[in-house]
Length: 306
Image 1 (cartoon, helix red, strand yellow):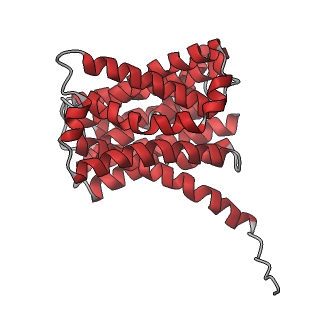
Image 2: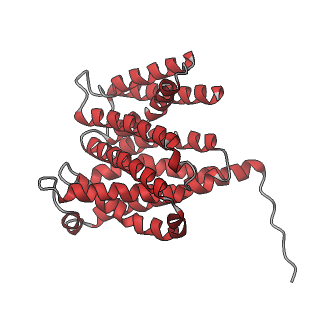
Image 3: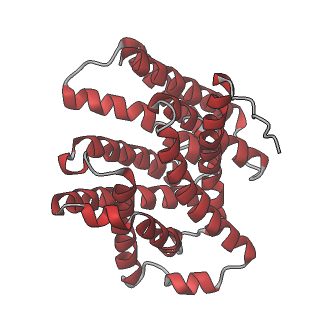
């Protein structure tokens, strides 16, 4: 019985094989804001966060058990510290999306791409290129207009929380690059310890009186739609996204992965408007365009420099 040789993939097709899963991660991340908004209220934020990450944490721990055992004490401390920052990010993002639209949330959080190079420049005392500063100004102007989607009013509490979340993400990125003890740790172990630390914070907060119902109480009240949203956030937006990033970085450049993941705000806007029925208004549409243009221009400016 003769075998038939399969045609080799061309370079362009190989690139698409790698790019499509990463693009899918950007899409599910963009959809995560509407999903979180659909299953969370002001009083259930902490309970939902406990449930979301408690589902995937055992899977990550089993998958990386050997590597976890190989971590040193300093690496555990460093990753645990990063987990505390990560818990703050998720708290700000989840409370923020409850009080604003999914479209605004996804677009405002994209300012991390602008804040991070600015913060790094401040730490290293290196002046950013003028083109990047112009891109940053464009993005900030866009956010101002975006928060005025229906007319000129004060930004909502949710908009401000998402802005703080973008700043917290910036702190997290800089800390990962500068905490010496975690530089040599593999990404699976680092992520597992960080999520474990974050879940511990959420569990402690859930036990404090007045912070909302217990996670199991919230879970018992979920219907099929809420469980579907929770599984989507846990399995696709966390577990699937993490493993795709690990897989893709080994097969393409980090810059290419970052560029594809940078489409997240586009997906957030598309999902919020098409599925969530959200409306931006003329100032909001103009603001969204400026945010997307500014972050894309800023990314290209940084990549061109380095």
